[in-house]
Image 1 (cartoon, helix red, strand yellow):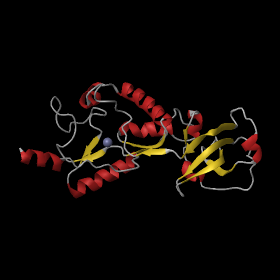
Image 2 (cartoon, helix red, strand yellow):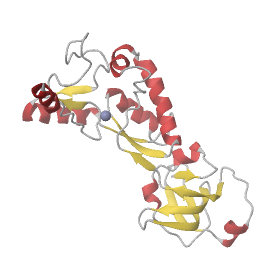
Image 3 (cartoon, helix red, strand yellow):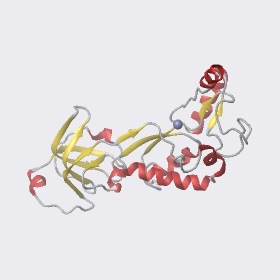
Image 4 (cartoon, helix red, strand yellow):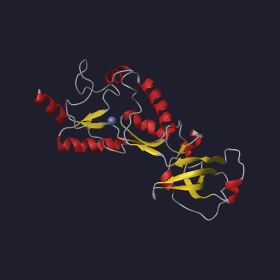
Length: 245
Ligand SMILES: [Zn+2]
């Protein structure tokens, strides 16, 4: 859930990141004990592509699920509320379902600061992990509640961002683990041997050529925890560029 307006509480955003479960209605406006009620001036409904006015959203803080979306009662529309842990007053704001960024790299930072090769080969994994934790939090605060990333360390980061006992705030994290790449097509070049492995995070990719190797690599990545399989078919591009020269 994303708030477009004057209020933004990452605690709520973190809890309410399963917004697809929001499309339900209830005739009973009494919130269950322990739930959070978000009073929204307007809610965007992606199913009907319309804005619904004066809605109340009930959230279970234990699971992070939205339990109910309904019209506000007269009391909720007209009474003064102090925003607290039980009621979040967003009656002057528009609330949106969370956005999904389908391609991010939380372990990387702008290449204008440090080149891609230097980030991969010179930055310690601890530094990269701290950066990733910061990026995860900033991504959530930006309203992005679902994200796809790639790399070995992303498996562990996904665990830290997920579930009732999440360690740090962040979006739901779907990972591709290591991308599949053809021999010689991808990875830091120059002072390193192509496809050299053994240094954690050196390329974030797995080399696979041909059907059988790719089939095996896909199984390996799924076994390692991948939600998605990422393929970088860069060799064709390299060949085209080389041929053009
Ligand atoms: Zn990528």
